[in-house]
Image (spheres, rainbow, N blue to C red):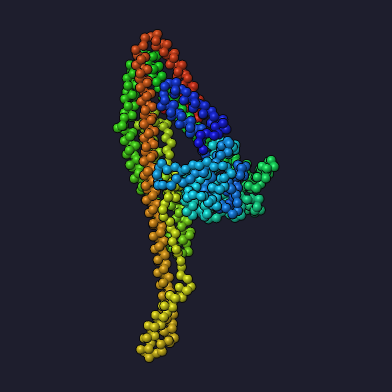
Length: 626
């Protein structure tokens, strides 16, 4: 939601970090550094309203919505035996409760400026927009629903996303879910206790574990199935065999609701939900919060370094007049370097430009290689089977494999872009050592959903009637041909020899017809999957190029801002040092006391930043930082 509805509920650590950032902004304003104030304003915005997304995923009718409602003790998600969730529902902190529906804006799905149309709704209207039974009066398409409610579990920025049942975890629907996995801080995989994990579920879990750092399995409806412990143990064995590292928590939504209604703590523990809430709070939100605070502390340290540089140089000039000119000369050289960094023909810009060109070629090659491998494996699978018997399973594999490869391609892009950022930062010398650029690489989910191709083809084997007609035609031809030869030899038209030959000819004709139709089905299958992968390559290739261009602009703007900051700092430091050279002894002593006081104030701010993230503090004890 817009703004920061939960600022008053944030943890003590975040509150402390926010207060230190505010002190940093005050210092930037006091020292007339609007550029540094703007930088810390963005830092505060990121810190004050983080979103730690937890995706609740699973097949239809596994109890996902009931689990979310029981976890939050609020009837947020509709639960009914006759309906199912059809669009994602994101639940976050907000007081008073509010809700909004996001509609697809239409137009070009690859347009980077394309944003969903947001429309506020009453909280009690949520069910009308998120279920399969939704019937809008217009042609608008609901893309998602957002709900804000006052719950302590959500107060630290946790966002729980109730996803639609994927209707077969290898289906086309699951491709979009796979595409969203890198955006999740955690995945809660839901399966009820009626049976052990299925093959598609285990495959999906393997994919989820590769793409998301935190995955936990939740076994639901344990109050309804007495043998849930046996199912849990079997699932543990399945995960171990598949090499999937994920805990299994067992819960009962019914027991949870009853326990909360009657304030029964023992029953609540029995429901299993306290363990799930603890996992979300301690393993997910706390770690994500720690990372956010560390990033804010790093920005604060960089800002204090900028502020200190002016006063440190001035102090050197004031403290030792004999070396003042050397300080001025050093600062003049530093200013010249800063001006080169700021210029339009700087080396860092050339490194960025060349790096992006190389990266585009590598990303395109990576995507093509992955899709070629998919095509090769698909051809091998089709050649080794009859598509009429395996097509549904093949489609599931194809959608899942392509989605996974596309996500890996975007991950490759992001990783290489970060490496490029590090190379560009090297041009900033010491100032670039701790430069952190948060690259915003788009979620490929919408790209996958925008692929205008599918693999729906009719795959029918010959029916009994068709087989009989083929055999009859072959038998009749054989009977006629060899019967005529028999008559020429003075034998009857239908003698035992011609009948036997006719039967063999019929069998041969039937086998030939089956082979011909099998070859035709395989050819159809190859054309269908090649059409799909070609379309994926075309659409994803265009989007990855657009994504890389946006990333290039983001890096360019970021480093241009850092170059401007360095130039401003060196210019101010040089001016202060030059003024110190011209000052008399009394003026220098008075100014020296003022400079020491300013350095002490900035040092207090820097130490507060180090207190937020002690690992950032230099080990030499100098307090210096880049």
